[in-house]
Image (cartoon, rainbow, N blue to C red):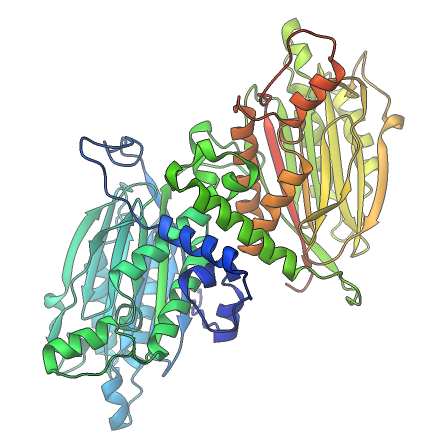
Length: 640
């Protein structure tokens, strides 16, 4: 039986997860914000303003933003939560695999009678969670009202003390309808394209006296509001207790969600930022909140302040449901544009690809990106005096296929990642140009799976064995490759051949970059049958790494399109925003894809082509279209 997840972050933990640039933009002051030069502060402020939703112009605007609904597709949730306790009487759970999230708020008035005011809220959430877990995989068509009714009946049968408000949401089996059931002032909102699309209406008996469920003297379960909202890919759902909605206006919440999407924040980061903002608002004096405004309207009070309370925030991103295999993650070309936040586009010169911020705000976005990078430079230390500790890899990948001739694997348990790129030249001979790369990676991964856990892995030996097995299998074609392993707790070892490459970044700067092996321009060394190189020409080496380092491995589809300085900027921004390895790999892969299709900005491949072919009358410009494989391995403490 699974325990009810209950995330209780301390205020200091929440504060540490909010990027300084975002803190400045949103006015969060839980700790001293960095001293920004007036120009940088103006950049940040202007960016915040640019993220406010813009009305559609008369006659319609950009059809990508204003017109026409896309064809419905099966959807899923990516959800996370943040809980900031005051009296510790809220409860919640998040079950994204079942498409269900729920929040409950114990009625604090019971506290005066010596009753555990959290008991009923905990019972509702525990009962509901157990039912969701017991439901068939995927939570087929879970009805929030039925779930709430069952959880309530169980709590009543147990004679649970206290009372509670609650809201339960589920993404129906069809994946396009968000069904809901709620009672009281636990609430939710749906945002679409940065704008408030739907907001639940609170149920109250009188001011600050919400509908509630309890064993006696509460409202009937039949008074719960229920219904459904049609949702789309890209929608953001925010659910919470009154500790959130009494302190944050719809407009403020809308602004945070819009900025979070523009920055590419994860659902966890967005939940943290919203909760942090709500906490600050709850402690402020001489500033109106929804609670103080309603109190003035209903009771004629004059105070202007927040309302101290438990704060629970659950954020769910509505995303397309897609099947992914462990061996090979293939992002579709349609998806790549959604992987890259506009702040990254601004940092690497892809402003003509903006998707969430309009081009007229280009200066604001670029200024914000510059201010963001300056903040990271201020934070970088020299790393001296860091205590040596056992480390491990936390890795993820992104694959954007063109001819589908790349292959890769990542095995965090063994601390090994590998990338291979089939030689496309074999294609013209009718040969499967991806066969050899797939053979190399499949063989190497199979060897790791059967290796005793904890056994040190030599990248050269692993690649050599995989090469031999692939040759014996009769696979045609050829392939470049790179394999990296984390050995002895803090030593990164590598073996590579050709132009499949890697870079190690520390504090956002490249400290190690592999040097490509090639016969001549665009003709790399490779492993293969008749005309491939011997394994003995593979480049091998090692270096010590430390916690916080980021290793990026990829095929030439990445490194031919993204320079080291551009990679540094993306990693700096991703690290500052707390991106997971998967987020980072997606954004790097998506950025490289956009660069490969860009005709107005020269890629490293175009620059080198001009250098090598300077006598030619016509020169190559723009990016190089190719398969793009990115593997990001974050070096973290083995205890984390």
